[in-house]
Image (tube, rainbow, N blue to C red; front, side, top):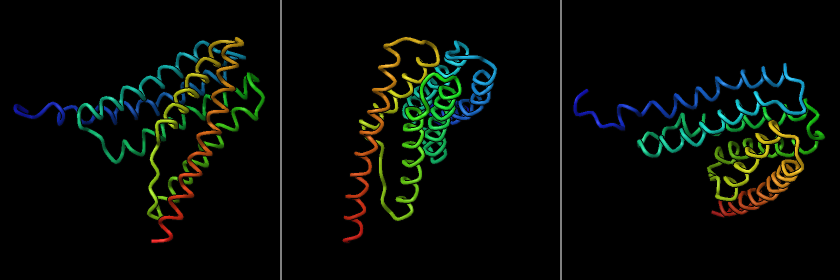
Amino acid sequence: MEGTPRTTRLGWLPNAITILRLAGLPILVWFLVVDDGPTSTRAAICFGAIGATDFIDGRLARHLGAESKFGRIADPFADRMLMAVGLVGLITFDRYPWPGPTVVLARDVIAIVAFVLLAGRGVVLHVDMAGKISSTLAMFAVGFALLLDARWVDVLFWIAVAVSVVTFVNYARVAARKVRVSGST
């Protein structure tokens, strides 16, 4: 392997981390099932560790020039699954009334379906900075809500829900414009 560039030798690492993220989800589910709530330190630490690897695998993929089709699909899938498990955990813990977590879950499901359907029609949507901020805010809010029962965490969570709605409306607006443009050409 002498003379093999570092990027080639370690190109598998970001995808391996993504797979480990997915493999960690059953552990998180286990903590959410066996712990009583309204919070769970074990679930929060597990959620945070899985969430942190999202940042790591993305940075590594860019740094190593190892971005792949698998990573472009599996990475956001792992993110959405982590959020879904965490949000369902908050509902089962009775941490928040079901409409709040359900709004974020519904936004994610509708966005994924729309991205796929539109891509099939040749309309490509990209996650913008507002979407990344919204997802990051929601991830932190869910993680802290699993860890702490505090007013500032509740405020953060409901802000994340509101920002999720705003970014969803923005994506819908952008998608509608792109569909109109693609239909007129």
